Image: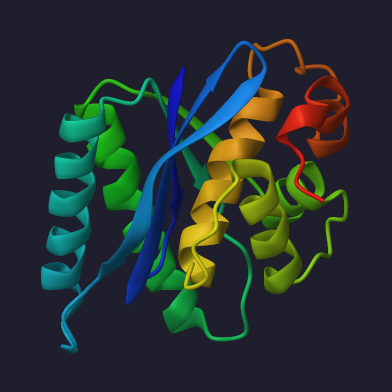
Length: 178
């Protein structure tokens, strides 16, 4: 199955596309969608929608996974993230993708083994799991890949029950780089 993971943000939205087949992960593509530096939100949402739609049409994922909303001190930030989540979910619905949502803690726990892991720890594990040598992987990008990997581990796959990076590594010792 091909999975697109989305880390929603009103200024920068991360995306990561992976393939999960026969209990094996393969990196396909990742990056960020940077919106214009303008105050108005609707034009930014249009950029995010259009870019996600373009990526879905090119890479044809089967599944769409996204981070759930989380509480922040600034209500305006929470609202903007909600808008981005809304257009992201809409593009997934318009492209008839299966949708899964995961909390930040759930994503970190499935990839790092610790729900309170730092962005640096998540990024380190993503590079290891996906065999990515790219040194300039952005946090939004690695977070989106983590969301996609979380879905792979929790989906209807051989590692579904209690799926995590530990079970993946046990089943695929050749995928781990020392």
